[in-house]
Amino acid sequence: MVRAKSWTLRKHFEGSPKQSDFELKTEELPPLKHGEVLLEALFISVDPYMRLASKRLKEGDKMMGQQVARVVESKNSAFPTGTVVVALSGWTTHSISDGKGLEKLPAGWPDTLPLSLALGAVGMPGLTAYFGLLDICGVKGGETVLVNAAAGAVGSVVGQIAKLKGCKVVGTAGSDEKIAYLKKIGFDVVFNYKTVASLEEALKKASPDGYNCYFDNVGGEFSNTVIAQMKPFGRIAICGAISVYNRTGPLPPGPSPESIIYQQLRMEGFLVYNWQGDAREKALKDLLQWVSEGKIQYHEHITKGFENMPAAFMGMLRGENLGKAIVTA
Image (cartoon, rainbow, N blue to C red; front, side, top):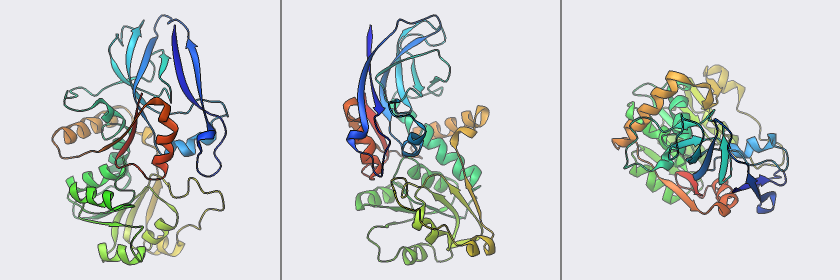
């Protein structure tokens, strides 16, 4: 019998998550039935969306999320023992799957690339950057793109794809280490939003003519300041709003309707799972190729040990990670 460890939501978060909001549970998994596989987690993802999605859980439910896992026992011919998959198994060391929803790694995955990238630049965050920038923003060469939380798993890929498409890219982040990284991977203009005297003035200096596309991971007052500097017919992809996820009081007021109306802006929220089939397959192929060729660089913030899942999650929400936050099981 296999004993699976899982992190559950002991108590719904009030403000910033605390260690006491989580509970580690252990259960014995039953023997496999025909068509099932036993998965052992290799890498587990922590992502900002989990802070919002946890509201839909009941207290006592397992925390959600993706992992890269290996099939260690199989009664399903489509997934023989040893197969590496991406699974929505949540925060658990072992799980049983009937094979539905399991994804094998994209064809042609090089041995030189870490498997954990299937949770990052060649996975959900990379796809989010790809579709948010190319489909929602509809970015074109010669345009100016602004991305915040630019050193994170999504933002860093957004900026690099925009550069591949011939854009000027402005990025903001919250530490000097992150700013140095953004310069290294080719962003045109970067600044630390925590240390500038005025966000409004820093944005104007970075692009005096304004912005065609804004890829928003932060929301709140930051976005209100940006939206006032969008060019006519500017496009805004609303990917996240990490600045307000832990807020307990009223949310800040939204952007000025005057800016949106008279600049004829388009704002759109989106979920990456809307793109499936051929579109998703092509995107993964593009991302894998760009990463393999060094056209998209990546950085992983790896926390060792399944027991440290909550700490990794809380640290990610505080912005302690550079690049994709990953836990090794």
